[in-house]
Length: 118
Length: 100
Length: 170
Image (cartoon, rainbow over all chains, first blue to last red; front, side):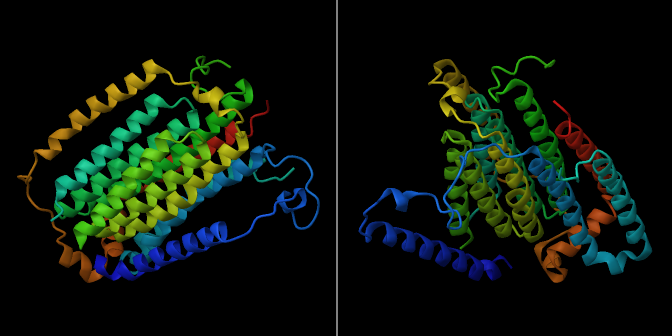
């Protein structure tokens, strides 16, 4: 069965090869005449202001953290969906319990204001 | 022919690299990454055993290891962020007090 | 065929985990670690653990490393030199020593040629018949039901802990 993944592997290798080739060609074949204007970071056509090294807000972290936890929940749902027909009501109950416990966490985050963007 | 011991040697090597990282690096975030590397080395051993013993329990275990890793990362990185906000550093030499 | 892919993915995983340890910038470490995770997913595919391989990409490369990169950018540490310090001899030696000790402890696996144990009840043919995911799901939701429900409590604790720390007013 692992043999059936060989096309995906070939696809990945071709992808990487094409990307490396394009970057290498554009690095070594191009004539460079850098000017201050050309080296400026491109921000949708506006002149850049401030530094790009500014610290992010901690709110991004809270959102990413909640994403991880509920990503794991979604990952548990995949195998459950595959065998749902075999498990019948029992499977439904066990998943409802699982999700209910995680919902408590969601309510806690909500109460704490982790979902507000202020 | 690739046997079980090949995978176990690879797993041991990855685990050892993780240990070296924990000893050599001083950045708390990078040390955390090395711990993830060690967890993955163990996962590889689990999967290899599950294949050669023809039992699927190892794969279910890897599933739970990943769940624990996700929970650990969420809390651990939150702690690193809090420590950084109160001490302005992630150098573990300087984070030597539990009370901020 | 299997040997070729094993040495390819295994070698790449080893090389990129060297980068995880020895590159100086945390962002580079994180990208090298993502690459290591992809190589491990390839090894899982060779071993016939298809579902775990997909989860590896989805959870480790897709979610956990994203959080790592977020935190690296959130803290945005300027002076790497200040964090790592100039070459600390003692620490290098300690690291090397620890590596030798750990590897020697794990080394007996070389000597292990065949395991004198009973084979389990899932030969590859039986797994292939219905697919890896179905069997894992059956085990997970029947034999491993209690760990599954306990995992939800663990995740709840993780949410509460992480939100508490992150929303703390300084």
